[in-house]
Amino acid sequence: MNLSLREIEYVLTVANEENITRASEKLYIAQPSLSQAIKKIEQEVGFLLFTRVNNKIKLTEEGKLFVEAGSQINKTIRDLQNRLNEHSQLSFGHLAIGMPFHLGAILIPKVLVVFRKQYPNVKIDLYENTSSELEHMIVNGSIDIAILPLPIENQNICYKPLISSRMMLIMAKDNPLCSHSYDMGLGEGYRYFDLKKAANEPFIIGNRGQRIRGITELIFKQASISPRIALYSKNIETIKNIAASGLGLALIPEQYLKDEDNLLSANFYYLDKSQDYSWVITFAFACSSYLSPAARRFMEVMKVVAAPKGNKNIS
Image (cartoon, rainbow, N blue to C red; front, side, top):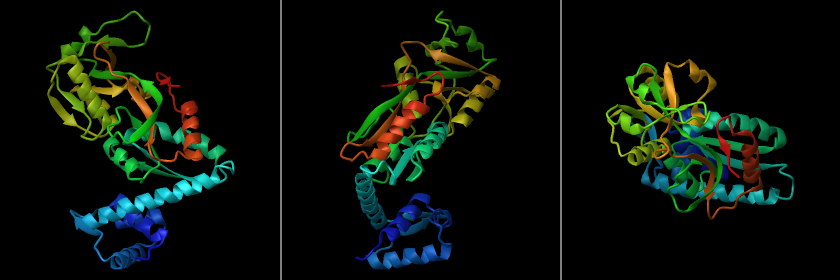
């Protein structure tokens, strides 16, 4: 088998995008040329790597093996590059970072602005996915690090805590249950709510694989309630807006609240102390992995930049 690193990158990008057009745009190559390259690679390895399912390009079983091995090869190259770079003040480097959909939109942009100014020659690739899928990508070497909320499920992943915030209950302002909220007298800005009072209310929660869904279910368990689920959504803004409309209640991290959310027809409450669960954001990486200088510097920048108001930076 005689394949170049560029050809491996072709397959990995098509697998990630599940679309030839998007992959060709990301690779800066014409779509027909990419399609031809994929056929050539399949001829070289002797197997079909992709098949079409419902207008999406999906990996065959052989393709999954190729991607797993190709990801490890890319990881090895990145590690070598970063080790060589360790003594050159990050004059070059390559960092592949994964993040959950909404969390990345909140944290990454302002961190990247600062990091780029300090280390303009470090190439960064960003990948958005569910927390469960990101754990898989860490272990198989597709990404170097991920910004992930706890709990981490895979025991082969190590992490460093970065930011902690509390979980908040969202409820429409005209919901009669608002009368059950109470003030702890601590001057914290929000009142408290006992979820047992909402045991019969519908809830909007995240999709399977999202860490926010798992934490919501843990909170239900701590509160000893099993409420009806009215809707599932991976989009935090959708969850907030639907809860504000009165179609259900929702639980989200305080970190996800924005100043403009004050304009929503919703009240926000801290949870009763016996029911609360800390939303802890971590810097996650494979325990067996080499944590490059670029990754370490990125983490340092994030600790300084990415803790918005209402969140605690964890040492």
